[in-house]
Image 1 (spheres, rainbow, N blue to C red):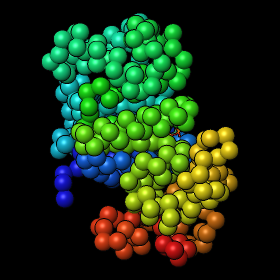
Image 2: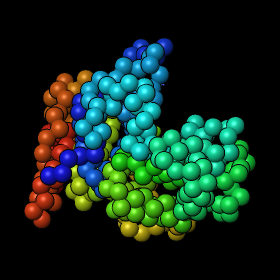
Image 3: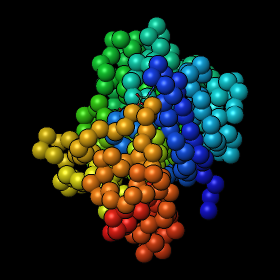
Image 4: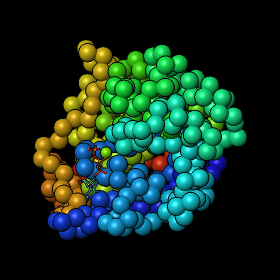
Length: 339
Ligand SMILES: Nc1ncnc2c1ncn2[C@@H]1O[C@H](COP(=O)(O)OP(=O)(O)OP(=O)(O)O)[C@@H](O)[C@H]1O
Ligand SMILES: [Mg+2]
């Protein structure tokens, strides 16, 4: 087996809040192989964004406690000096945040930001970097890239800014791309174009991708594996076929519940989102004892659900039938396990 691009081991994040300690990420383990795409799904507040911000050292140091390991090509991101982290951002990790304005500098033109990002990590002339910047803007589908390169972020629409952020994230051909709802605000055609671009980067450079999304059409279309988060934990992970076709955890089944057909866009051209499950997720300052999902679980019954946390255990895998050894795991002992 080839070495993973990213190996996350027992990642935990606690945030101090006025309402007490928020246990936002509670022991996450996963790997991303070269060229592989891992989709991270789960309801709002399940800790998806915080879990990736922690990897990049982007949580406020005063209030956040991050533990565990996150090996990027063998080197622990959580133990890196700020200088080393700066070197790694770019060629090591490219990141697209949920809100594009947080990652753009409002006082610099788009071109300047791209050129500086490229020249910080690659030995190229300013001219060559600018030419590459225009090319990247064209690749992410920005209209009139020759002019857009001299624009300031506030002169662009939200969708255009998002594409600029994607261009910056891809500009140093990163080993790992972390995309947090990167294409959610974009129309389907542009989204498809960006996904093509990312897939090309993956086949050319072996880029590993962590793709956070609510959009199951995107999951079905691009992911190799899926990680389902709830209450800051992974409640299920496995190949895209295993998780979407044979969901073993009642939470995953709930998310997939009202799904029409994954492959079919809706009548307005959009893809279906995760379904709604009755009730709301627990606040991270007050997680239930036992299984995080039990207060909302339609099949709870076992007394252990309320007192013991079910471990992430292997469940039936479709891929095993095809000779693949990729695991399918779920943190459940309820119901009949995997169907
Ligand atoms: N800086 C912060 N201080 C305190 N609590 C925070 C902070 N950032 C996030 N949280 C809390 O951590 C939990 C997880 O938030 P996170 O943003 O990771 O969720 P998410 O899964 O990305 O949700 P969404 O799908 O809405 O983007 C939420 O309960 C949120 O309120
Ligand atoms: Mg988020």
